[in-house]
Image (cartoon, rainbow, N blue to C red):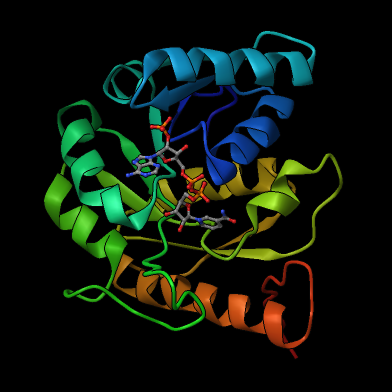
Length: 219
Ligand SMILES: NC(=O)c1ccc[n+]([C@@H]2O[C@H](COP(=O)([O-])OP(=O)(O)OC[C@H]3O[C@@H](n4cnc5c(N)ncnc54)[C@H](OP(=O)(O)O)[C@@H]3O)[C@@H](O)[C@H]2O)c1
């Protein structure tokens, strides 16, 4: 990624993961547009973020307007509404990088892998959005609650996508949060990241851990 930081639209940025990522990226000097189904809610969320950051880094718009106005679009919406939101931002996303954080969790069994038909949310999103969109999957294994704290983070992030430059750009976004990003191959590999989250939720319960994450080691 060049030195000029692109504006990031965080679709669903009023929620847990989106607001936490927006906080980290705001701290790192990115301009953020919080997207919401309700533009007023987005404005309120942006105002809260600016107050926390102590400067004006964020604005708020409807999801579609946010996607139109930004260079990079990050999806942080529940799996249950992912398809509809992808369709809403489809036109705005053409020619851009879209980062998909979605885990196909199907409550109440959130500690069980339940992949969608077609295998992976991110792969389906790439197919729906088309080849002009560089879809990159990331952040599935990072807990929003950890990102939301104003503390250094530990852990790694698998970054999957068919376009190497887009993956490199997203690795810069991962590093801006304080985590380490890894090129983890094409979008087909996102099935692994999406499957890890239910396992981490299981570990959190089984071992009474706050928020487990992943680390790649080389021995
Ligand atoms: N939370 C985590 O720790 C975490 C970690 C890794 C990955 N993820 C993934 O990140 C995505 C967002 O997770 P989250 O915990 O941030 O979710 P969340 O807080 O429940 O929802 C995020 C936002 O999505 C929007 N939204 C759109 N359609 C919705 C619907 N039908 N019902 C509820 N909200 C809807 C809402 O914004 P508006 O009402 O403003 O539109 C909401 O604030 C999920 O796909 C999740 O799997 C989460």
